[in-house]
Length: 87
Image (tube, rainbow, N blue to C red):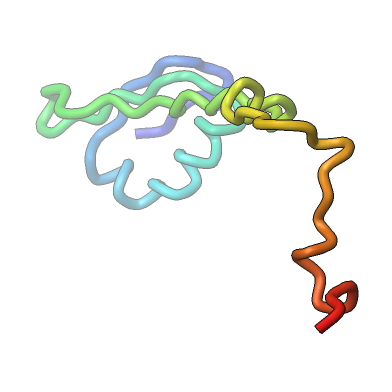
């Protein structure tokens, strides 16, 4: 069975789908549409493009997740540095 590449929704037999599966999947991904696969004239599957996940920016993903305790500007960390110790 041949098909028109401009048709959004079409019906093809399982044998043809098996033979052209990868090309059909590429075409659906690019152009959209739906393919109904039949066996002996009865529909057995419908193939359509998967929904693409919405891209979300990572900016602000940690906003509100942390808590600042104490003074972060005037905090003395000299005891944490080996070079500053006077042993």
